[in-house]
Length: 152
Ligand code: DQA
Image 1 (cartoon, helix red, strand yellow):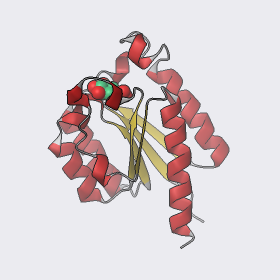
Image 2 (tube, rainbow, N blue to C red):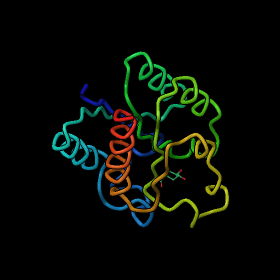
Image 3 (cartoon, protein in one colour):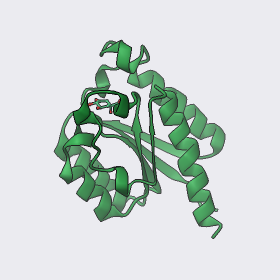
């Protein structure tokens, strides 16, 4: 079976994790989170690429490139763009790459404007509210999903 290649894409302000609103987002930096994910992916025999951008267009370009590169799945924390970006939704739909929407905080327990996601109905699934573990849960979930599809 071909080795799975998964892209982890993080949106605006997530480069500030560690110092940004620790009550919502915890004390771990994005580098800490990525490092743990990469070693988990290694143990699971999966290739993992991590990217972060504060710019909507750049996130769209990363998604388009993932389509060209044959990436098998995307774990995306679109951050504030979750609630606003038709462009990110359209890019994900255009590539047809299965994706998981990931949030550190439980967006449904927070301000009302965070309750709406423009991606949720197109995602394989959503993980929110578990801090950095949201990413590891999403990784386990998407691998199981892809392996199930490969076996079909
Ligand atoms: C977030 C939740 C968003 O509402 C917020 O804008 C973020 C982070 C999360 O991971 O909990 O930047 O996506």
